[in-house]
Length: 202
Image (cartoon, rainbow, N blue to C red; front, side, top):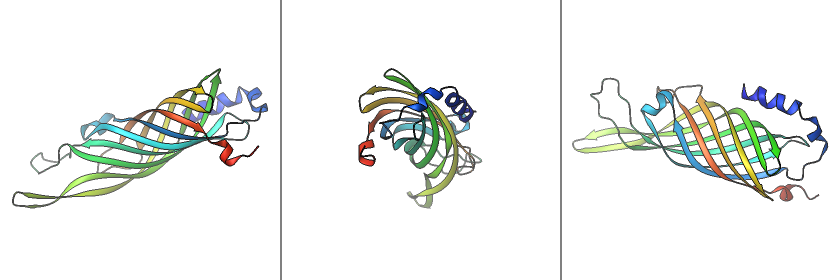
């Protein structure tokens, strides 16, 4: 649905496509929280997270490609089937999620609003109890791979070659995470820096 909104918004503003862009590539750095929702919040809680990425505009249009690496952190409470097993509480879970979205950005003076939609995937580390030896507990990190669909909206304010942005994205895994669903809303603020001159001399 978000992808369709982006597409039709672009079709309604052809006049903007006539002016060549001088800001074609931005480097993105953000921080915030990835908030679990629905069933996911029963075993994950948000912690401070960071993300890196870019914004690459396509030709003369307001369309852009939006690659990002999400380094989200969570507090993890292990779920059990009977409630009688030993389990981990207040553990730490970390994600390494790479996403690739298509977006459309509409600028009004220094302000701009945008929407994105796409897919991604990566790995989530979950702490697990490996062995019990008397009063000693051995733990390990279990590596889980997931595939994501996502869509989001955001806004930014321009200070010349720097954009200050805030955005929220809904993400949902297509497969299970340790037998559980994974749904979250990463919320980030940060900056984008125009690095077009590194790639384009003119």
